[in-house]
Length: 214
Ligand code: ZN
Image 1: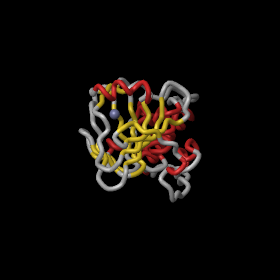
Image 2: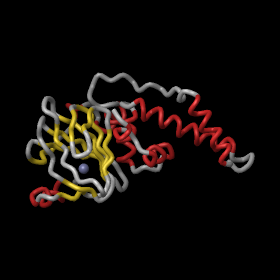
Image 3: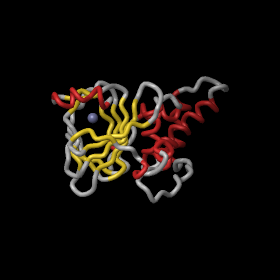
């Protein structure tokens, strides 16, 4: 699991500051409950924020103070964070709260080709959805008008970038055009969030797009 499967700085800062749209916040919170590396990174961000606040009233926080703070953080293990509650299901706790249960509580709607989705109730400018992709099936080739976060909850998928499995997050933007394909074996279930409609190349997905709000 490389760093490209975890959160970037913008998402970490936004999450720590509470400024992400609700749909992104949900994906990040769910990813954090599955990924130790991202939880440690968030701990470091919160520590930096806390140190800067503590030192701010005394004087301006010069680059030396910041360097010292960062060195202190690097030399000490990340602050202990409450371990996420043990879960025997597919959905970590933050997601279960939105769905009202685990996978069997999801009300799926067919997207065609065996692919299913379930929109989740979030407010704000971004949308969150669960995606169910049967083993070996590809979702339509598409580009992005904004940011798309895709977090794997079960199974795995591969695209032009890499292969992603449970706990991995893919961050796609305008520069990426891809066609995720589910691994053979078990169905791939993902939690995805977008802040703008996707750009589909195929005619049929384009025609169906308004109906599925994808
Ligand atoms: Zn995409």
